[in-house]
Image (cartoon, rainbow, N blue to C red):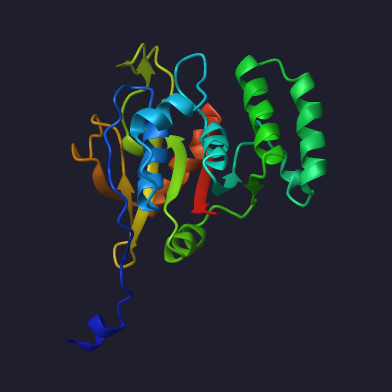
Length: 240
């Protein structure tokens, strides 16, 4: 072994199973089922989908996944990066003050979907969910993985895949809107600076098997651009 190989940092690889989402709108609960299985839970994908709240369009939000995990006796921590829900000045507030701020905002916003998202965060905190406002960096992601914690994240599939926007579930760069998606981050290759992804979609341009690696410089902006669909967020679970 050469000296350079001896000092190279080792990859982090968590053995997260990959399930295929059964339709176009169940990526969130499918990712949640992947994380459950990693921690040894035998809950079926059908059960996880059934017990996860959905939006009017059939999709879900990371906070709904967090609420579902709390009901299944997991600890849940959300790292939120959505400025539509959280104001940057709230990062030092306690739980009760954050809930009060969210209640006030919920009464004033006009968007029904945003109002529902804010209400869900209120429920999440009341049920014992935790928030952390750490900066979204490579070191944060690597540190969580080193702690043996897969990261369920909501992000912009449009940016991650570099595909056209979507209109009625079809690619349409003119009429389309950015598409949100959920994946699980489960590893990191330090030498190439790439994160390992378990993607429940069968339409990923990177891999039909849903297992691929993506550069940090692509993944981190994709997560932040999840703001467009209210899901610029990391969700980290651990068994009670």
